[in-house]
Structures are given as structure tokens and as C-alpha cells.
Length: 358
Image (tube, rainbow, N blue to C red; front, side, top):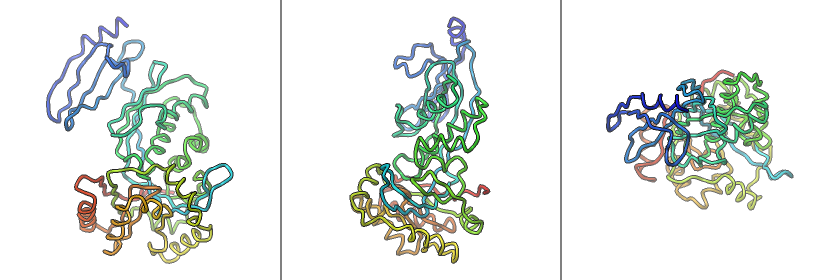
């Protein structure tokens, strides 16, 4: 500890304002005791300072062995729910694809007996409900290694959007811890572990366009023609200033069993899209009607865009939506419509379906 204190006293402060980063050395007595830290990086943004901490390990030496991983968002290009299963989950069929857009997670080992998580994003839980911290506990149980980790999450995917952000972050954590400890868990093992964290978590292990079945944990590869049809497709994401609770959406669906779809309906959509390549044959989401009854802003906007000829849909249980585009001009037109309907400060991203190989 004396060595750590000496290290702190010798650190230099580099200070600047309004957009420039400054790094300040501080003693190990942070009043909120968020983490036992010897270096605090503070960034000035808007009217507050998000704080990122770099730890000093037990020997007092600064550690920089951060492993950086991407955690892509996903969209459901078709989502059909068939009914509630005896285990309480819902049986579904969905065509899912990852996006080039997503979060970024940094991981490193620490010398303490506690995992730490820092996030620059808003509305990110910092307690045990966070799937990244749940993934860390699961990993320790599976590998029987009492190693703890520091996580830094650059959160870009909005919470409660139907874009799989929390699940993707958790899988990135599993893969990162596997790499740092050289545990040697196979991808199949990682998928098995991921399935205990969330129904859609296994998808993010490979994050290639897939057919999702069961409660979401059963993944099937799509045929090469369909893959090539999807790869690189441009789209825009937009979300109102509210999220949708997934549990509420599924509970509401269970109270309206007439909205459940037969397996044959989903299979027909997939078959017709593969045969003709017409997006109208594919794009469908059973949750749009349920969510739209309570949140009228979503179906109203989608109807306006649809009348202008755009292929658009809500992703997952919402509240984020997407529209397919061919270029910048279409993207800008959609953005103008979204801002007119939902206000100027909506979440908005122009991205594409991943071109990652099968």
C-alpha cells in the first residue's frame, strides 16, 4: 500500500477544459468508495463528468492490460411468437441479424475480490442486475477460478430498445474473460453458458444472421442465398425517448393469445423471402400491435414511413425501429420524418447488417 501511495504522489496531473481529457492522480480515499483506485480519468461532456477509473494492482503497479471487444446490436427481421411453453417461456421463430453498430466493452483482471463496472451510457444498471456482472459470476463458477475483473462499457445501444444490447455485452464479457484467462472454453461451451443469462444471448457468440427458434437459444444457419441477400444491407435505427420492458411485452402478449402465430406462418414468410427476395414477404413483428396499443407514437410513425414506400418495422419487443435504405438521401428523408414526429433529440443511427462470413 505504501508503494501505491508513493506511485500516486508521483503521478502528474494533465488538466484542460471543454472536450480535452485530463488525468488527475488522487489518493486511495475516494469518498463514494466506488472502486479502490489510484488514477481517475475524467472527461468533460455536456454539464457533467463521466468518470472512468484505472486501478492499481495489489503490488502498486499500474495495469494497462485492457482487452477491447465489440458488442454488436441486432435486429429481428421477422419475429413470430407461437405460444407459451410449460416452462413459462415463449416459443418463437425469428430471423435475426447483427449490425455494424454496437457497444464496446473493455475488460481486465484485477487483484481484488470484487468485479467493477463503469459505463459511459445512461440508464445502465450498475448493480447485480447487469448482465455483464452476472456473466462474470457465471464464468467463475464454470472455470472454478476466483479471478475478478474490471469492466469499462462504452454504451451506445439504448436500453429497452429491442436491440439486444445487454445480451451482447454479456457475451462479449464471456468471450473476453475466456481469452484473458486462457480457459479454452469452446464456442459451444460459451453458447451454453450464454443461454443461462438470456434467451437471445447465444446468438451473439457468432453474431451471424440466423434463424432463432425455441425460446431463442436454438440457432440455425440460413441458406447462402438468404445470407448474401442480407449481408451489408443498409438501414437506419431510430428510437423514441422511452424504452419497452420485455417482460411487460411478453406478459401482454400472453393475455392476448389470439395474436400467437402458427409455425407455418413464419415458415411461409422465410420461404417466400428466400424465393422472391421481396422484403414485404419477410418483415413482420407480432409485438408491433401489442406495443402500438399503448405507445401510439410507434405505429403512427411506421405508417407514415410505409406510405412513403419505406420498408420499416419495430425490432424485438421495441421500442427501437428500423427502416431499410439504399443511400444517404433516403436516410436523411427518414430522419426528417422521425424528428418531425418524435422530436429533434431522438436516438438515430445509420448502419448496416453485418457482412461477417458464415
